[in-house]
Length: 164
Image 1 (cartoon, rainbow, N blue to C red):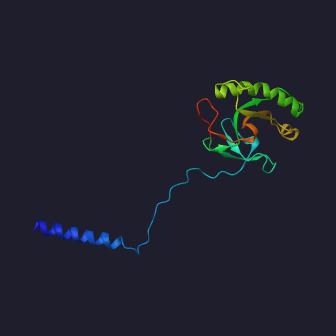
Image 2: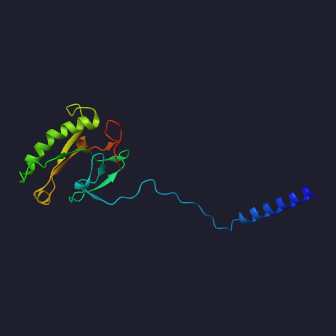
Image 3: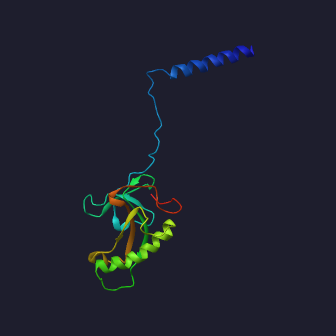
């Protein structure tokens, strides 16, 4: 009798399972979360060391898209320079020269290699404008870009890191 009860229970479970797996049943597939969250454009002035980004020169409004460094990107921030030693705005060119000297050291610290003729990238210093200086901006960004507009892929950081 025990074997009959088990066989009957097995038949009921099998009938329920087959009945639920018919073609007319609505198929539910779980959705995975996106691998990368869509990020809205960011101001160039909001970037931090390790951010990889694209979108320069697109709209001329200094809005860029932060992307994962493993993906193709236009540039990477490898350091910041504090320019707070000055009270009055000395001009963008003076700030750029001051930042360039310190950015060269930041590049060596970030990548483990000195910036020089063998480097396969170009460099830019993003310095405050008169308006942003008046609003309290006292820092410059050190940015590495691909040579002749080429894309970068992967972080230039010595540890391969980089945010985003």
